[in-house]
Length: 128
Image (cartoon, rainbow, N blue to C red; front, side, top):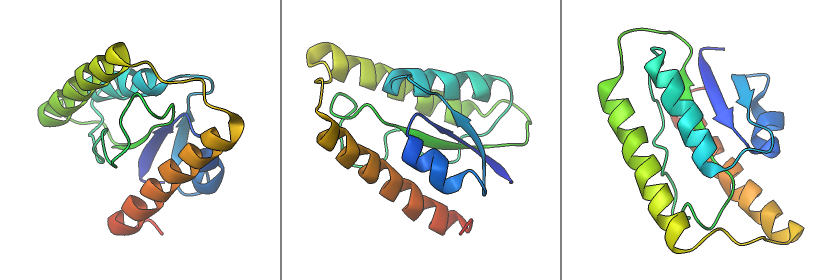
């Protein structure tokens, strides 16, 4: 388990809990996942996947999954800047148009999309 997967998506947690140290943020929202990731970067973890990957806007989906290094090192200043910018962007989207209270079948679709994004990036990182 070389990296940490930060997620609020139970499908991602269930699929990858044997390959990653999963930090599952049960009941937390999109911005809270970003803030948790930012705090981990401050602790010395490195950002490995972009927080705004995919084409779904932050105010459309409640789910987000991000991979960071398990090793701590020097402050990842570029990763920190990316996460900070992502938090600002997500807040702007959500302030302008809050995330709807989606019915369960739509939430399921968003979980599948987030899972698919993670499957693709994990394959590219060579964790499959």
